[in-house]
Image (cartoon, rainbow, N blue to C red):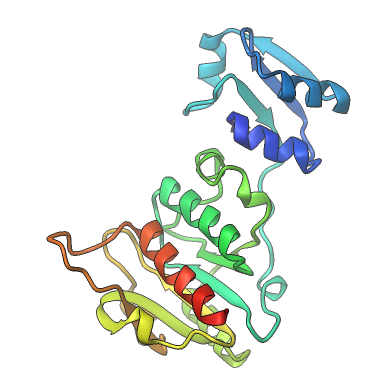
Length: 231
């Protein structure tokens, strides 16, 4: 797969990720990146902007990396300690939302993110670019059935917190211990079955005329409430 952008390139280079090949635009002049490429002896090819634009559908900033497809983790990899924190994305479809959530999860120290295999955005170049390369630092799991996964998390001692406009003020809930936060689809929110399987529904009070928040913003607000309480 192709990933692109200066920050993504630095993330891969600084963490010695396997890079098959790098394409550079003929006027690329980020010498810190060029020096790292040369030191690591990575195969490169120089192209004009027109040919670079044909390779990816996004703002590549003059650098494109050819890397292995993203490798998802297993559920067992993220179920662990007494204060484990997991995020489930219930059919998030916007890659920019997904990328922003991954970046927030990395900052918040989330143990892992769970997404369904159907009707959900995958980890692609846009997601990696939006996450500023933090997909390499957060474990992401794809599962066939979210409700079966929620049941397994409950069997392992997790409390499940859904997010919705109609629920308990998110600051009034207790997030200590094993916690799973669920963020619903951008337009439809959580599916009925997922909602029914939640132990609690967390709601963010709204005072303005806008009656809902972007999925990534809402997830960030609740995750940092979790961090605040655990301090």
